[in-house]
Length: 349
Image (tube, rainbow, N blue to C red; front, side):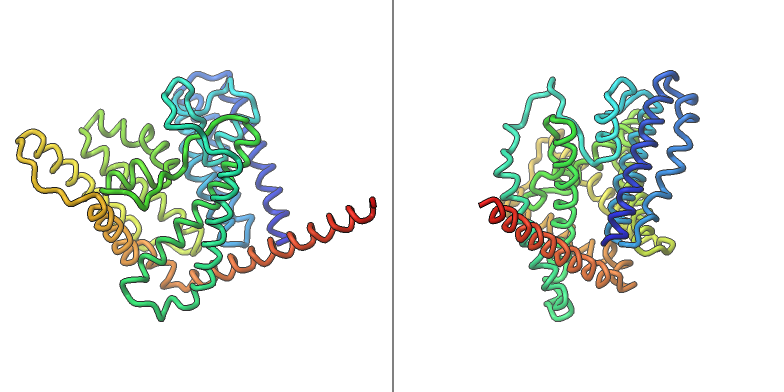
């Protein structure tokens, strides 16, 4: 953990320096090729930084933050679009670029009041406890019924992403002092694939895919092409993320997973449009049934295609071991802090 913390400090410092350069370089250049050329050194540096970590989790999470989200935001900055702007204060520019957050637009209507710090801590603690339970149960995965394995894997990935993204959001909120857009919106309540991917699951990804991929493809070829293009690019970027996990070339299974879901999402849109135009509304299942079918399709196809490369290589066991080590480190740190605080209190009495 000491070496990983040192690597985290180095990567954070390098990312901060890169974002400072990006802000300074783009401030005096017009959007387009000049900005893109100026940002090219940063775009070449970001994919290298995650290799500073030996931990699979930290390497993959940093790649997601820096290579995917930050890289796409910088491409939008080169085009004069997106959440980044050279006029932003440096700390805000860095937080918005390097962390998976999106500052809520004050001009847009708010979807309810932001959660209080007490509610956030309670929610985070409960999810962390549940994740710890799942990590402990992972050793029994081979003995689980076949129908339970996809749900177990899906819950494991969801909670892991929630915890990492919530931690990054807490840091960003402390740096910015601003209200942030939600990163997830209860994906376990999704009633369709479009609802799941577009409005509930890991919302920081659609936030960069829409302006980078979907809108240009839709303007040129139509909405279905925009949806398919966004899913294909998502699949390709997930293959890149899996490379940081396995350090091996992709197998194409993850791209196939997102291509399948993109085609199904387009089919959903066509069915809805045809029913609306024809006035022939077929029977729709109750929302709980639709949610169950949606989640079953997502977890079933994920077990077949998405998780296959990691499980086949055995790295899922290594990731679980890292999670167990992380919990042990946090537990030991908590005990040491408690003991130190207790000694300090008693020494002043």
